[in-house]
Image (cartoon, rainbow, N blue to C red; front, side):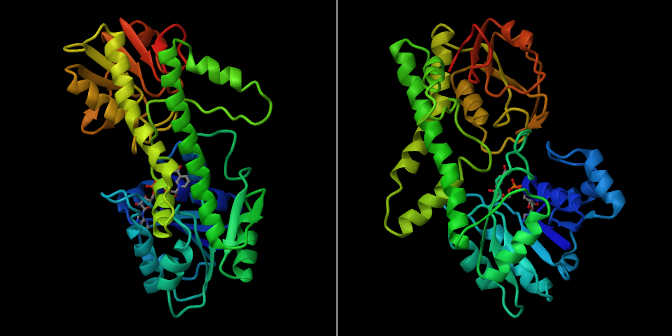
Length: 396
Ligand SMILES: NC(=O)c1ccc[n+]([C@@H]2O[C@H](COP(=O)([O-])OP(=O)(O)OC[C@H]3O[C@@H](n4cnc5c(N)ncnc54)[C@H](O)[C@@H]3O)[C@@H](O)[C@H]2O)c1
């Protein structure tokens, strides 16, 4: 099939490579011309896709990136994978999705299957995309993306996909397309069910992470190890699922998607109390971490040299969006510490560059990537580990 993927970020490039690998002819469309140029030279910008893999599809003619909207027309399948952030008031910002609807309206004159993979609230495909595209008889489906960047066990092929269509023909076409590179497609009755399932999946994580973050504070105050309790509870073979505590939540999904659900909940008069409380608990974690560091360092960090290790939001990815490392660093600085950070994947961030760990008075491990120098961390006078992966040091 001739396929166009709109948005060549984490999600779009992953689908593009999956589809190219299945033998489709893929155009990766993006509004960022620098990214398009980079991709066309065979240089991937995401962890799960190697330059060799991308280069081989470019060489075979099955993938090319483009910033030219005329490349979209004539596609059998058009997949939308653009950002769905929150605005300044923490309400859904669908401006990217609306821009794509306008792009399709203005440039796609032959009928296509249009699939939205961007995460959004129920009704987005129907009301915010399909309703804005007129004059051509397209098919519309929703298949919310479930990619977990950096996850080597679950990828495009073996992670089951949900598909909900506006019409049976849309579902049939979407199953044909996704079935060519994904092992398991699960049909749901409407696009709204698929859209809501994605929000519920991430809200489930957000609420459980908040619960475990609150629990470790209780355990610490009781003088027991929260992580040991979680491991002990996880020996129960049913009815319990372990989540890991941490310095907060980051990335494009867990801090954002539940607020999309809360937004529609409010519109229909249901107060999304769990989501609100979970947000509060997770957003307060950097403050808790800093409080523990100050206490662990003897009551003051004024003038202390602190290395914050790992500033991306999770291990082995370079993504710093919404990372709790930002609040941890800011709050350590507010307490008078001289803070540098070290991240072998991120390199530069917020106008600062990665610094060595060695020579610091305190090391604070926010995220631990493979290959980080643990000896340099434990060589610092005091270590606070938010990842629970360094033996014999303080942490959560
Ligand atoms: N990153 C993840 O782990 C993940 C997982 C599941 C779902 N999602 C969802 O997938 C969607 C995309 O996320 P992402 O992480 O790939 O974002 P991203 O920021 O990595 O990539 C989005 C890309 O879209 C491009 N873009 C913006 N407006 C455009 C337009 N009008 N036309 C064409 N391209 C445009 C941007 O230039 C960027 O390259 C979001 O809804 C997100 O919530 C993300």
